Length: 159
Image (cartoon, rainbow, N blue to C red; front, side, top):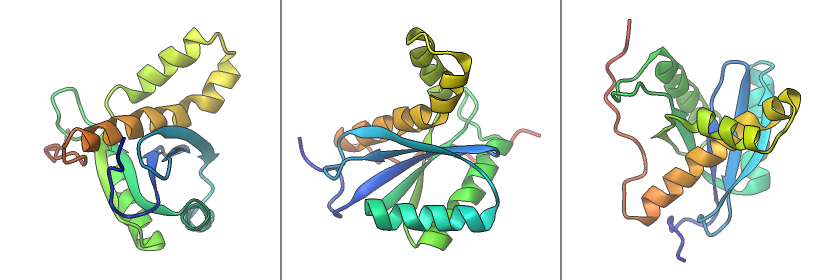
């Protein structure tokens, strides 16, 4: 299999949430995504340091932020929040950010965790990073198949 990005380094997938953020990373060949971590949000300064450290430690060359959209593809208020977060992330890390449709990733992750017969506490501890892995895997597959990768979802918001 070949690398989907000519730039050497890893791609990180972000499952954005207002309380917790899930992170997955791709291998250096940018073909396989793995869950990396979940972290609870504790303010902008702590998040800035965490993401700058992630970029340095893991050689991150691109972030893929999951974009929560409605079933018909329209963006929601959460999409706006995810885009704002992505803009902030690019600014504080200097790493490009793209957005990718994350519909159904949390429900798919929950199905996998439920099938593993984990306790509710253990499912909660793994959910966001697994959702990030599922979204990042779809992104990598899209690139490998010759797709553009980033979503071009319409920006119409629900009121």
